[in-house]
Image (cartoon, rainbow, N blue to C red):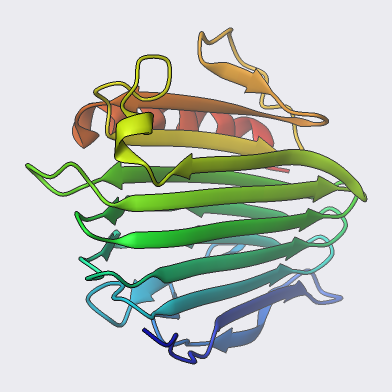
Length: 245
C-alpha cells in the first residue's frame, strides 16, 4: 500500500529573557495534536492528544520536538497508540527530538500496542547539546488481549554533545525468534525508563544499563501490562526528581 503523506506534529519551546517559557510552535499533525496543560512556574506542560483511532497500513506518523536553550518541556500522553491489522501493509512512527544547551524534556509516553497483523517501523532520534537532559518512559505491547502480536522494529539513536550516547535496534518482527529463551520468551510487554544526558543515580537495580555517556536505562519484561507499568512508574518518579535541573 502506498504510504500516505502526513503532516508532522511539531512542538518548539523556548525561554525568553524574562525566564518565561514560550511555545514558538504548536502544530497539530495528522495523528497527534499538542494541547497546553495547566501552567507550571518552571516549565511548559503539553499533552499529545491522538486525533485518529490508531495506525493503519500506509500511515506515517511523524513528530518533531525542539527544546531551546535552558527551556523545560513536559510531555504527557492521555492514551496509548494502537497499530491495527495492516493486512499485508506497513506503517511507520518517526520522532526527532532536539534539545539545546541546558534544555530539558520529560516525556511520559503511554503504551504502544502492536496488534496481530500489524507491521510497524518505529524510530526515535534524539540530539542533545552539552548540558541537555531527557527522561523518556516507553512501553511496547505485542498484541491485544489474546493475541500473539504483530511485527515491530524499534530503533533509537541518541547523541550527546556530538557523541553517540545510545544506539539500539530492537528487531521484533519475527515472532518465532523473539519468543526464544534468552530473547523475550513468553513476555510480550517491553517497558523502559531512559535518562539521557544525566546520571539518575539511585540505588542499584538488576535491570539497569549504563549508557555510553551521561545516562542510564532500566528495561523490564512481563506478560501483562499493569505490573510493569507500576514498576516503571516508581522508577520514573525517582529518576524525575534527580534529572530535573
